[in-house]
Amino acid sequence: MPSGFDKLRYTGRVDRRFPAYLDPTAQRMKTRVEALIHVGQKSIAIAVLNLVVHAALPLHDAKAQFGGGMSPGGGAPMAPGAEKQKFRDYIHNQDGLMIRREKGDAVVAAVKVVGNQAISSHRIHQKLQTRKNRFYDYETVLGDVRRLNDMGSFDHVTFKIDEGEQGVTVTFTVNERPTVSKVIYHGNRGLNDRELSGRAGIEPNDPLNEFSIESSRRRLIDYYREEGFNQVSITSQIGYEEDDRLILYRINEGPKERIESITVEGNSVVSDARLLKIINSRGPMFGVGSYVSNVADLRKIDGDVDVLAGYYHNLGFLTATVGRRLEYDESGKWLTVHFVVNEGPRFKINDIKIVGNEFVTEDSLRARLELQSGDMFNGTVMRRDVGELIYGYGELGFIYAEVDPKTVMRDEANTVDLIYDVSEGDRWKVGQIRVNIEGEPHLMRETTMLNLVDLREGDWIDRRTLELNRKRIERSQLLETNPQIADPPDIKVVPRDDYLSSL
Image (cartoon, rainbow, N blue to C red; front, side, top):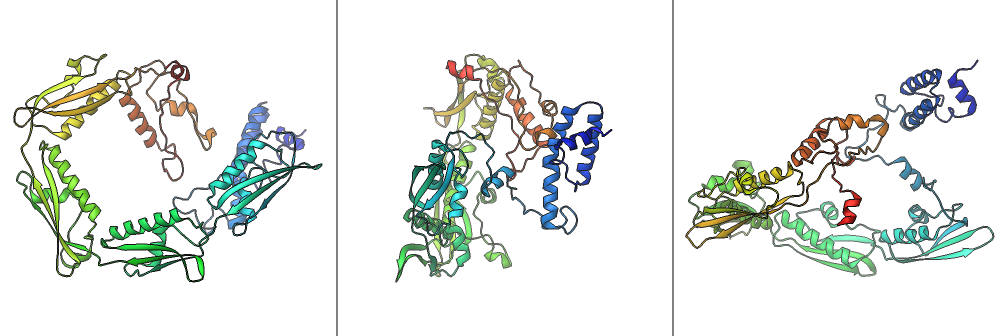
């Protein structure tokens, strides 16, 4: 009498799941299926067989294409950061059947594309979901028009429907935009064409668009300034001589500027070494380091002005101002950067006020504060106190509570009032905890994920616990955390629909 597995083979179910070239992993799955069927769990066995569809067949395809699959020397590995295309998307891009429920009464007899010259019909058909021998659906056709417009290669797209005995013929008429024939960079010496092409983002056969050309010109100017060419000027031109689709960039680079030295003037409380360490601009190193990491980026220098001003404000010098002065040498290639600081007085806290709190008493909030009246103002400690207030509310279920710190200058000399403006929001409980696993859900049980979460249904939501559970899930090494491959694991708090409808 044939076994349970052979019975399934006779019905034709197994042949599609277990081909003759099973790898060792699939062989173990086959043995497990036979054991399950032997004890009468046929439904479970069928489920296991369905899982093997994704485990055995792709491995065989890899061996057939690369000559060995996972064996040594069996083909090049996937490039770092490359994302493997989903099987459904692959089939759809190859004009195969799309996995979805079709609707409609008439059948599509033919799909035609007219008006295209530079863009191939095959590339256009890959964007269409209206296919021959499928059901005709007007909404799908409108979606196809939108997808063709999103390609950016057409000025406008129209369609026409012709009904016949064989079915519906859908004709898409496209009007192509003129394309770029060639891109020329003239006058560049410090940066080569390959570097400029990567930043410009315009290549031959791209749509000829004035807005895109102007955007690329600005990107090139920003790129030159990042590399120290602060006096660069670039103009763009469409068409040259007999070619009206050629793009010409005329570049006047100017000298490449480097920082010879950086000085700080007017500082007395903080040393020069400390201030030079917190800024991003760097001067030359000794010896061969004269041309390393000292490119003069004016945008970075202006950002350092804000960094120094914020540093002084953080220390309590709330009225401190910082400026900068540039001094070039005779060649115009080396410059000295002078940061001028006006420190001003250091402010002391006169009074601390908490406003906006309703559910939590002011005394319990003040107990969490590190800054007190009479202390010197310190921005770092103030931000730490804001975090403590937010976490204090978060422990009670106010997960959307916000605290906005404000400083008010007093009439008394060098004193300031500190006000914490609290917005409590609503108090939230845990309703349902749902686990959504993408990729291969059968490889991970919901109970495994729930055991990593400390929250229980009916408890008040704790904001600190939420963040700890997020970190615990990321460190568990059970899920993919590389954002280039998949979305990192996360815990999302979603208000219930019945509550949102009552607002």
